Length: 340
Image 1 (cartoon, helix red, strand yellow):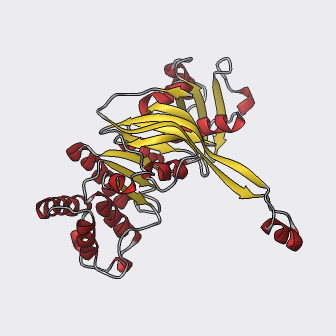
Image 2: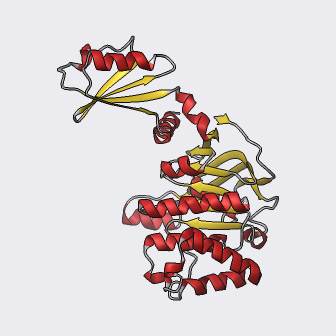
Protein backbone atom coordinates (compact mmCIF):
# COMPACT_ATOMS: atom_id res chain seq x y z
CA UNK A 1 0.00 0.00 0.00
CA UNK A 2 1.31 3.44 -0.97
CA UNK A 3 1.06 5.90 1.90
CA UNK A 4 1.92 9.62 1.65
CA UNK A 5 0.85 12.23 4.19
CA UNK A 6 0.79 15.94 3.41
CA UNK A 7 0.72 18.29 6.42
CA UNK A 8 -1.88 20.97 5.83
CA UNK A 9 -2.91 22.08 9.30
CA UNK A 10 -4.06 20.68 12.64
CA UNK A 11 -5.14 17.04 12.71
CA UNK A 12 -8.91 16.84 12.23
CA UNK A 13 -9.34 13.08 11.84
CA UNK A 14 -7.00 10.43 13.21
CA UNK A 15 -7.75 6.78 12.47
CA UNK A 16 -5.63 4.19 14.28
CA UNK A 17 -5.87 0.46 13.55
CA UNK A 18 -9.62 0.89 13.01
CA UNK A 19 -11.52 -2.38 12.67
CA UNK A 20 -15.18 -3.30 12.35
CA UNK A 21 -16.53 -6.85 12.33
CA UNK A 22 -20.13 -7.98 11.93
CA UNK A 23 -21.49 -11.31 13.12
CA UNK A 24 -24.36 -12.98 11.33
CA UNK A 25 -25.96 -16.39 11.95
CA UNK A 26 -25.11 -19.21 9.57
CA UNK A 27 -28.36 -19.80 7.70
CA UNK A 28 -29.45 -23.24 6.58
CA UNK A 29 -31.48 -23.89 3.43
CA UNK A 30 -35.19 -24.68 3.34
CA UNK A 31 -38.06 -24.09 5.75
CA UNK A 32 -36.69 -26.44 8.43
CA UNK A 33 -33.29 -24.86 8.01
CA UNK A 34 -34.82 -21.46 8.69
CA UNK A 35 -36.27 -22.68 12.01
CA UNK A 36 -32.96 -24.32 12.96
CA UNK A 37 -31.22 -21.00 12.33
CA UNK A 38 -33.49 -19.31 14.89
CA UNK A 39 -32.07 -21.53 17.64
CA UNK A 40 -28.53 -21.89 16.32
CA UNK A 41 -25.57 -20.20 18.01
CA UNK A 42 -23.28 -20.63 15.04
CA UNK A 43 -22.16 -17.36 13.49
CA UNK A 44 -19.82 -16.27 10.77
CA UNK A 45 -17.75 -13.12 11.11
CA UNK A 46 -17.42 -10.61 8.29
CA UNK A 47 -14.59 -8.08 8.51
CA UNK A 48 -15.92 -4.85 6.97
CA UNK A 49 -12.96 -2.64 7.96
CA UNK A 50 -9.59 -4.23 8.58
CA UNK A 51 -7.03 -2.35 10.75
CA UNK A 52 -6.92 0.86 8.70
CA UNK A 53 -4.78 3.90 9.54
CA UNK A 54 -4.76 7.44 8.19
CA UNK A 55 -4.68 11.08 9.29
CA UNK A 56 -6.58 13.98 7.74
CA UNK A 57 -5.54 17.56 8.45
CA UNK A 58 -7.45 20.80 8.73
CA UNK A 59 -8.43 22.20 5.33
CA UNK A 60 -7.90 19.05 3.25
CA UNK A 61 -10.41 17.80 0.68
CA UNK A 62 -9.95 14.04 0.57
CA UNK A 63 -11.59 11.59 -1.81
CA UNK A 64 -12.47 8.40 0.05
CA UNK A 65 -13.19 5.92 -2.71
CA UNK A 66 -13.63 2.23 -3.41
CA UNK A 67 -16.05 -0.26 -4.93
CA UNK A 68 -19.44 -1.15 -3.42
CA UNK A 69 -18.95 -3.11 -0.19
CA UNK A 70 -15.34 -1.97 0.18
CA UNK A 71 -15.92 -0.55 3.69
CA UNK A 72 -16.37 3.16 2.90
CA UNK A 73 -19.76 3.71 4.52
CA UNK A 74 -18.89 1.55 7.54
CA UNK A 75 -15.75 3.55 8.30
CA UNK A 76 -17.57 6.86 7.69
CA UNK A 77 -20.26 5.79 10.19
CA UNK A 78 -17.55 5.02 12.77
CA UNK A 79 -16.04 8.47 12.18
CA UNK A 80 -19.47 10.03 12.74
CA UNK A 81 -20.09 8.01 15.92
CA UNK A 82 -23.00 6.01 14.48
CA UNK A 83 -21.10 2.72 14.78
CA UNK A 84 -18.73 1.59 17.53
CA UNK A 85 -15.42 0.10 16.34
CA UNK A 86 -14.65 -3.55 17.05
CA UNK A 87 -11.00 -2.60 17.45
CA UNK A 88 -8.74 0.43 17.19
CA UNK A 89 -10.12 3.93 17.47
CA UNK A 90 -10.92 7.13 15.62
CA UNK A 91 -10.53 10.71 16.88
CA UNK A 92 -12.47 13.65 15.48
CA UNK A 93 -10.67 16.84 16.49
CA UNK A 94 -9.20 14.85 19.39
CA UNK A 95 -12.53 13.33 20.53
CA UNK A 96 -13.79 9.74 20.23
CA UNK A 97 -17.12 10.13 18.38
CA UNK A 98 -18.84 7.00 19.71
CA UNK A 99 -18.24 8.16 23.31
CA UNK A 100 -19.16 11.84 22.88
CA UNK A 101 -21.63 11.91 20.02
CA UNK A 102 -23.25 15.25 20.92
CA UNK A 103 -19.91 17.05 21.09
CA UNK A 104 -18.75 15.53 17.80
CA UNK A 105 -22.12 16.24 16.14
CA UNK A 106 -21.48 19.97 16.60
CA UNK A 107 -18.15 19.65 14.80
CA UNK A 108 -19.31 17.68 11.76
CA UNK A 109 -21.82 17.95 8.93
CA UNK A 110 -23.04 14.92 6.99
CA UNK A 111 -24.75 14.51 3.63
CA UNK A 112 -25.90 11.06 2.49
CA UNK A 113 -26.91 11.03 -1.17
CA UNK A 114 -30.26 9.25 -0.76
CA UNK A 115 -31.22 10.45 2.75
CA UNK A 116 -32.28 13.85 4.00
CA UNK A 117 -32.18 15.65 7.34
CA UNK A 118 -34.85 18.13 6.19
CA UNK A 119 -38.48 18.09 7.35
CA UNK A 120 -40.59 16.77 4.48
CA UNK A 121 -43.82 18.78 4.80
CA UNK A 122 -42.61 22.22 5.82
CA UNK A 123 -40.95 24.93 3.70
CA UNK A 124 -37.18 24.66 3.35
CA UNK A 125 -36.58 27.91 5.24
CA UNK A 126 -38.44 26.48 8.26
CA UNK A 127 -36.14 23.42 8.27
CA UNK A 128 -33.19 25.79 8.38
CA UNK A 129 -34.73 27.67 11.31
CA UNK A 130 -35.19 24.40 13.23
CA UNK A 131 -31.55 23.43 12.58
CA UNK A 132 -30.47 26.90 13.74
CA UNK A 133 -32.09 26.23 17.12
CA UNK A 134 -30.80 22.64 17.33
CA UNK A 135 -27.20 23.78 16.83
CA UNK A 136 -27.62 27.03 18.82
CA UNK A 137 -26.41 29.17 15.91
CA UNK A 138 -26.34 32.89 16.87
CA UNK A 139 -28.69 35.14 14.85
CA UNK A 140 -25.88 37.11 13.19
CA UNK A 141 -23.98 33.97 12.15
CA UNK A 142 -27.17 32.35 10.87
CA UNK A 143 -28.00 35.35 8.72
CA UNK A 144 -24.46 35.54 7.27
CA UNK A 145 -24.25 31.79 6.53
CA UNK A 146 -27.74 31.58 5.04
CA UNK A 147 -26.93 34.48 2.72
CA UNK A 148 -23.66 32.80 1.69
CA UNK A 149 -25.37 29.44 1.08
CA UNK A 150 -28.29 31.00 -0.81
CA UNK A 151 -25.93 32.84 -3.16
CA UNK A 152 -23.54 29.90 -3.63
CA UNK A 153 -26.17 27.17 -4.10
CA UNK A 154 -29.00 29.21 -5.63
CA UNK A 155 -31.53 28.42 -2.87
CA UNK A 156 -33.70 31.53 -3.11
CA UNK A 157 -35.79 30.19 -5.99
CA UNK A 158 -37.21 27.38 -3.80
CA UNK A 159 -36.57 28.57 -0.23
CA UNK A 160 -40.29 28.79 0.59
CA UNK A 161 -41.35 25.51 -1.02
CA UNK A 162 -42.11 22.39 1.07
CA UNK A 163 -39.19 19.95 0.88
CA UNK A 164 -41.40 17.21 -0.62
CA UNK A 165 -41.96 19.39 -3.72
CA UNK A 166 -38.26 19.85 -4.46
CA UNK A 167 -36.53 18.09 -7.31
CA UNK A 168 -33.58 15.80 -6.55
CA UNK A 169 -31.09 18.49 -7.55
CA UNK A 170 -32.81 21.12 -5.40
CA UNK A 171 -32.99 18.76 -2.42
CA UNK A 172 -29.29 17.87 -2.67
CA UNK A 173 -28.37 21.56 -2.67
CA UNK A 174 -30.69 22.11 0.31
CA UNK A 175 -29.17 19.14 2.17
CA UNK A 176 -25.65 20.45 1.58
CA UNK A 177 -26.73 23.84 2.98
CA UNK A 178 -28.38 22.18 6.01
CA UNK A 179 -25.26 20.15 6.79
CA UNK A 180 -23.08 23.27 6.79
CA UNK A 181 -25.43 25.77 8.49
CA UNK A 182 -23.64 25.40 11.86
CA UNK A 183 -20.21 25.84 10.17
CA UNK A 184 -18.80 22.38 11.01
CA UNK A 185 -15.07 21.82 11.01
CA UNK A 186 -15.52 18.59 9.03
CA UNK A 187 -17.98 17.81 6.25
CA UNK A 188 -18.71 14.17 5.30
CA UNK A 189 -20.22 13.92 1.84
CA UNK A 190 -21.47 10.51 0.71
CA UNK A 191 -22.37 10.57 -3.02
CA UNK A 192 -23.48 14.23 -2.98
CA UNK A 193 -23.89 14.41 -6.79
CA UNK A 194 -25.53 11.02 -7.42
CA UNK A 195 -28.25 11.17 -10.07
CA UNK A 196 -27.82 14.90 -10.71
CA UNK A 197 -27.53 16.69 -14.04
CA UNK A 198 -24.32 18.39 -15.14
CA UNK A 199 -25.34 21.95 -14.15
CA UNK A 200 -26.40 20.98 -10.61
CA UNK A 201 -23.22 18.92 -10.15
CA UNK A 202 -21.18 21.96 -11.11
CA UNK A 203 -23.04 24.15 -8.58
CA UNK A 204 -22.42 21.65 -5.77
CA UNK A 205 -18.72 21.26 -6.65
CA UNK A 206 -18.30 25.03 -6.73
CA UNK A 207 -20.03 25.36 -3.35
CA UNK A 208 -17.79 22.72 -1.76
CA UNK A 209 -14.68 24.49 -3.09
CA UNK A 210 -15.90 27.84 -1.78
CA UNK A 211 -16.68 26.43 1.71
CA UNK A 212 -13.20 24.93 1.84
CA UNK A 213 -11.42 28.07 0.67
CA UNK A 214 -13.43 30.66 2.62
CA UNK A 215 -14.07 28.76 5.86
CA UNK A 216 -11.26 26.15 5.74
CA UNK A 217 -13.79 23.32 6.04
CA UNK A 218 -12.22 19.87 5.95
CA UNK A 219 -14.09 17.67 3.46
CA UNK A 220 -14.27 13.87 3.19
CA UNK A 221 -15.90 12.91 -0.10
CA UNK A 222 -17.07 9.42 -1.05
CA UNK A 223 -18.22 9.11 -4.64
CA UNK A 224 -18.29 6.90 -7.72
CA UNK A 225 -18.15 9.98 -9.95
CA UNK A 226 -14.45 10.38 -10.77
CA UNK A 227 -15.10 13.89 -12.06
CA UNK A 228 -15.98 14.89 -8.48
CA UNK A 229 -12.61 13.54 -7.37
CA UNK A 230 -10.62 15.26 -10.12
CA UNK A 231 -12.38 18.60 -9.63
CA UNK A 232 -12.27 18.72 -5.83
CA UNK A 233 -9.67 16.45 -4.23
CA UNK A 234 -5.97 17.00 -3.75
CA UNK A 235 -5.61 13.61 -2.06
CA UNK A 236 -7.38 10.27 -2.25
CA UNK A 237 -7.68 7.33 0.11
CA UNK A 238 -8.69 4.14 -1.67
CA UNK A 239 -10.20 1.26 0.28
CA UNK A 240 -10.94 -2.26 -0.97
CA UNK A 241 -12.10 -5.31 1.00
CA UNK A 242 -11.73 -3.30 4.21
CA UNK A 243 -8.07 -2.46 3.54
CA UNK A 244 -6.49 0.78 2.37
CA UNK A 245 -4.67 0.15 -0.91
CA UNK A 246 -3.62 3.73 -1.68
CA UNK A 247 -3.27 6.94 0.32
CA UNK A 248 -1.60 9.90 -1.33
CA UNK A 249 -1.83 12.93 -3.63
CA UNK A 250 -4.18 12.62 -6.58
CA UNK A 251 -1.52 13.88 -8.98
CA UNK A 252 0.86 11.06 -8.01
CA UNK A 253 -1.49 8.14 -8.48
CA UNK A 254 -1.29 8.21 -12.28
CA UNK A 255 2.47 7.80 -12.17
CA UNK A 256 2.05 4.37 -10.61
CA UNK A 257 1.17 3.14 -14.08
CA UNK A 258 3.57 5.43 -15.94
CA UNK A 259 2.65 8.18 -18.37
CA UNK A 260 -0.05 6.19 -20.15
CA UNK A 261 -1.50 7.71 -23.31
CA UNK A 262 -4.35 6.79 -25.60
CA UNK A 263 -4.18 7.77 -29.26
CA UNK A 264 -7.43 7.50 -31.24
CA UNK A 265 -7.23 7.79 -35.02
CA UNK A 266 -9.54 7.52 -38.00
CA UNK A 267 -8.21 6.11 -41.25
CA UNK A 268 -9.54 4.81 -44.56
CA UNK A 269 -6.39 2.74 -45.02
CA UNK A 270 -6.83 -1.04 -45.11
CA UNK A 271 -4.93 -2.74 -42.29
CA UNK A 272 -4.66 -5.88 -40.19
CA UNK A 273 -4.06 -5.33 -36.47
CA UNK A 274 -1.64 -8.25 -36.22
CA UNK A 275 0.55 -6.66 -38.92
CA UNK A 276 0.78 -3.19 -37.32
CA UNK A 277 4.04 -1.96 -35.79
CA UNK A 278 3.96 -2.64 -32.03
CA UNK A 279 7.29 -0.84 -31.47
CA UNK A 280 8.73 -3.88 -29.69
CA UNK A 281 5.42 -4.54 -27.86
CA UNK A 282 5.33 -1.04 -26.42
CA UNK A 283 2.16 -0.11 -28.34
CA UNK A 284 -1.15 -2.03 -28.22
CA UNK A 285 -4.00 -1.68 -30.70
CA UNK A 286 -7.75 -2.02 -30.39
CA UNK A 287 -10.57 -1.39 -32.86
CA UNK A 288 -13.43 0.75 -31.56
CA UNK A 289 -16.34 1.20 -34.01
CA UNK A 290 -14.90 3.41 -36.78
CA UNK A 291 -11.65 4.22 -34.95
CA UNK A 292 -8.34 2.58 -34.16
CA UNK A 293 -7.14 3.04 -30.56
CA UNK A 294 -3.44 2.88 -29.66
CA UNK A 295 -2.26 2.67 -26.04
CA UNK A 296 1.33 3.14 -24.88
CA UNK A 297 3.54 4.41 -22.07
CA UNK A 298 5.06 7.75 -23.05
CA UNK A 299 7.94 7.10 -20.62
CA UNK A 300 9.04 4.17 -22.79
CA UNK A 301 8.39 5.42 -26.30
CA UNK A 302 8.54 8.81 -28.02
CA UNK A 303 5.03 10.11 -28.76
CA UNK A 304 6.33 11.72 -31.94
CA UNK A 305 7.35 8.31 -33.33
CA UNK A 306 3.85 6.91 -32.76
CA UNK A 307 2.15 9.95 -34.32
CA UNK A 308 4.49 9.87 -37.36
CA UNK A 309 3.62 6.21 -37.87
CA UNK A 310 -0.11 6.99 -37.73
CA UNK A 311 0.12 9.73 -40.34
CA UNK A 312 2.67 8.25 -42.74
CA UNK A 313 1.86 4.52 -42.59
CA UNK A 314 -1.84 4.55 -41.68
CA UNK A 315 -2.79 7.82 -43.41
CA UNK A 316 -4.70 9.05 -40.34
CA UNK A 317 -7.36 11.63 -41.23
CA UNK A 318 -8.18 12.51 -37.63
CA UNK A 319 -6.22 12.07 -34.41
CA UNK A 320 -6.94 12.58 -30.71
CA UNK A 321 -4.50 11.98 -27.86
CA UNK A 322 -5.38 11.78 -24.17
CA UNK A 323 -3.74 10.87 -20.88
CA UNK A 324 -4.96 8.02 -18.68
CA UNK A 325 -7.98 9.15 -16.68
CA UNK A 326 -8.25 8.88 -12.91
CA UNK A 327 -11.21 6.55 -13.52
CA UNK A 328 -8.94 4.15 -15.44
CA UNK A 329 -6.31 4.31 -12.69
CA UNK A 330 -8.87 3.54 -9.99
CA UNK A 331 -10.21 0.66 -12.04
CA UNK A 332 -6.69 -0.77 -12.46
CA UNK A 333 -5.93 -0.44 -8.74
CA UNK A 334 -9.17 -2.13 -7.75
CA UNK A 335 -8.52 -4.96 -10.20
CA UNK A 336 -5.06 -5.42 -8.68
CA UNK A 337 -6.57 -5.51 -5.17
CA UNK A 338 -9.15 -8.14 -6.17
CA UNK A 339 -6.36 -10.44 -7.36
CA UNK A 340 -4.57 -10.25 -3.98
